Image (cartoon, rainbow, N blue to C red):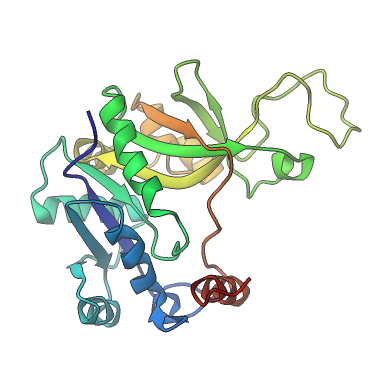
Length: 256
């Protein structure tokens, strides 16, 4: 069975402090949010829309022929914004929603379809996400690299900013990875069942979530199955800085 009828939602806000007005910035002739819209349109979804609380973003998306859902401005997370969209659109509990961040113009479109397919293939999962192998000591110990430990069935056991699993007997002076341990970096790509989105919002923040500043720990602590597909390599990074913006523009201009 293949995924069909899934939706892609692109949450987009103007609130970036590192790169003001980020969704509206030019990326080789198109605003960043429209570049992300193009990615989503190629994924084969039945419905693609941008979720925003700002009319300026909405106007740019509509001018590009895109669909917009205006949402509240006070959502604490993008997941809460997705849940509002699902309610407003009347999507059924078993519908699948793929989240594409509005600053990820270089994510391969096929990964969005593959996220939806994970939920089709794993009925016990409420959320699907992805990870890649960690290859360096620096990445393993960086709090900016979120780690995930998996169960034998490919479902998440735990997410952390700390190195997990912790190799107790490893040489602390070594700069190589401990042998015999599989370390994985979590990628911030998600697909949800609509029922899980509603459950997420109803739960409220969990102590683990607050401590690690990782919202995926909220549904995990409540027993929601999170299936993790391991990719050989990560997709290109998103746009957080002016340098990232120029790197993305160079890709679309065909520059090396």
